[in-house]
Each structure stands twice: as structure tokens, then as C-alpha cells.
Length: 328
Image (cartoon, rainbow, N blue to C red):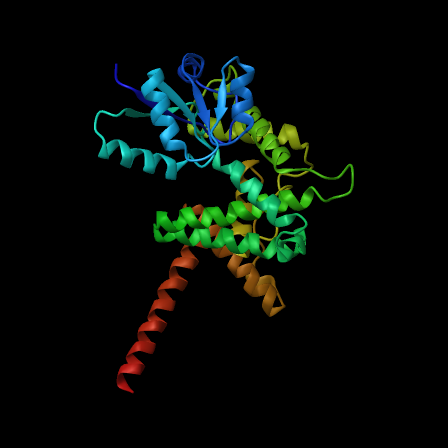
């Protein structure tokens, strides 16, 4: 019978005793070794298996145990014990037939597991002894950074750069988790955490998608959007169709959003006439609003259109600068 050494690797982001049936089978059937006491060794012992903590070099003990007992299980640490696996692999390569090395996953990271790492890292940085800058921030002091990171993510999308988008979304996530961590320091009765943020989001998604989570029918995309808005209005109990619009968004986008909301409830409120305005700034504003209304009527996004034209103009400026440099 060929001797076997099984490296049992588990996710550090799951409870220690949450193992697969195959993992429980091997730890109950074969001798189990580990490099240190841990929650995993305690969980395995509590299930009736015997665990021995190796004091000193582990490779010789693993090889000897495998050859005398037929099979042995090594409970890898949170980092996977890569150095031990490398050393063991090199010895077995030098001595063919000594034993077989098998990797056994006792548990895997579930989707989204690294979000737990984000929360843990931000907690460390925001706690006493962490990063003084982050500990000095407030929701208001971070507000500009949240906008900036969202704009940078938008730039990545506009450029079609998915690698940059991945990084920028990480920066947006940083802002979300940092705001949630700051909220844990609010007075009793006002504080909340990232779990509250996630819980509210999950509840909202379930409520507003009855065609997925309840007995509602999917219908067309237009019907789904209308159902979303109907549920949203019932939840918010708002006095106006304009309630809830982010007033700090760029002016062109704000104008388009207000026009869109008014149209949803069939309110025929004409924009002010530029000619009727006496003040030059008001005249300019009315003219711009009329332009946004015309763009919306044509199915165009005025914010995107102006951005496109502005960026094209910026490139023309750069070309002119390069031409000037060449001449000089």
C-alpha cells in the first residue's frame, strides 16, 4: 500500500468546523498532525479525532507517520503552509516511492469572501493604533473623495478600460466600508455598521424584485421598471415625484433627471423661456434647460454629449500645444 500524506486546506474566512464530508472522513480515519493549536484543531478534536501538534520539523514526522500508518493528515494553517508543502514536495521528488502527496480542500472561500477581509482591514486601520488619517475623518470630510472615486470609475467605463474599472470600483468600495466603519463610532442609538448597509440592500433588492423572489411576473423590461418605481413610491411615501433626486449631481444630469421624473407622471410643465428672462445668468440657464429638454426628446443623454464634445475639444487643445512645441 502506498503511503499518503494529505494536506488539508481550509478557508480562514469560514468557521473552523465547517468542513466537507470528505474532510471529516479522512480526519476520523487517519492520524492528524498540525503545526500549532488553533480553532481548527479544537474543532477536529471535538468531533472525536485525535490531533497531534508537531514540535519541530514537520516533514520527517509526516513521512514517518505516513509510512508506518499508511496515511496521515496535515491540518494546514490559514496561509496554507506553502513552505511546508514546498519542502515536502521537494523531498518526495528526490525519493520516488516514499509517499504520495495529496491536496484536500476541507472548505472553500464562498463568493464575496474577500469582502470580509476588506471589513477587517478597514477596522484595523480605523481602530486605536491604526492609521491616524483615517481615524481623523468624518462623513463630511470624506464626501468629496466618494464623488471623486465614482467619477474615476465612470471615466474607466467611458474609456472601456475594464482593468482600470476593477481598481476604481475597489476605491469606491473603500469609501463605502470606511463610511460604515465611521458610523460604528456614532452615539448609542445612532450607530450602524457595514452589516446594516448590506442587510438594507438585500432587503431592498428582494422587495423590489418580486418577479424573482416572489410570485410576480417578469413581463417586459418597461413593466419591471414601472413595478420597481411603484414599489419604491410605496416604500418612501414621498410627497413629490421629485423627492429623492440627488440635487448635488452635475447640473445637466440633474436637469435631465427632473424632466424625466415629471414626464413619468405626465406633468406637462414647459421649461421657462430664455427670452422671458431679464437676468443674463437666468437667460443662460433657461436656454441650457431647453437644450436638455430637446436632448431628452431626441433620446440623447445631454451629460454624455457635453462630456464627449468637451473631451474632443481637450484633445484639440493638446494637439495645438504639440504643434506649438514643434514650431518652437
